[in-house]
Length: 158
Image (tube, rainbow, N blue to C red; front, side, top):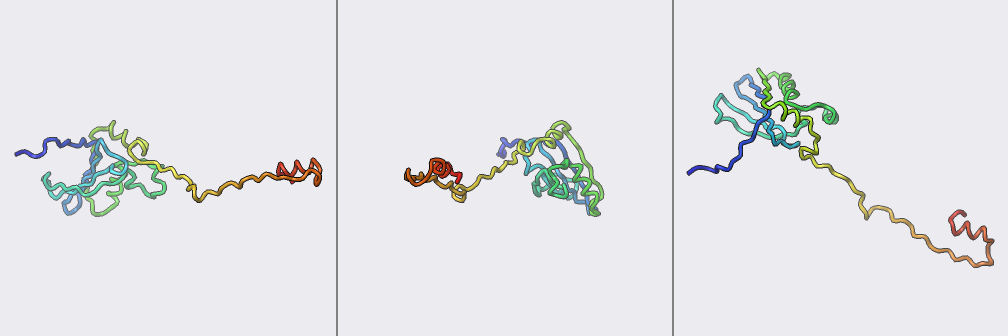
């Protein structure tokens, strides 16, 4: 019997292959349907056989951008990850292949909310919000004050 034939193969837009000194490969792929938080997919591969390729983790589009508090102003991409890996001694070679340039560029330039990053709007808690003080009507007997003084009290100008 055949397995599930309804499996849809992911379209890879770009791939980074980094080879360590011991021969283990780290493969980072960007798929066409990438979201903001699952932008890069990390794999490890021991040797040259495709059967040894194992999924490791997914990371967001801001991976490799340091300092983190300025990540929104920086340009993300596999090139940033490649320069980070070249700085580490354990990697002997790092290669970046862009398979579909237009789709890759669109993914990098897309706004985070287009890629699925939700925007949170904070609302004030109505239980904590101060309630306005109700205005109490003032009844002043006619003979006690002048008309001008009564109007100042009623209008709150006293």
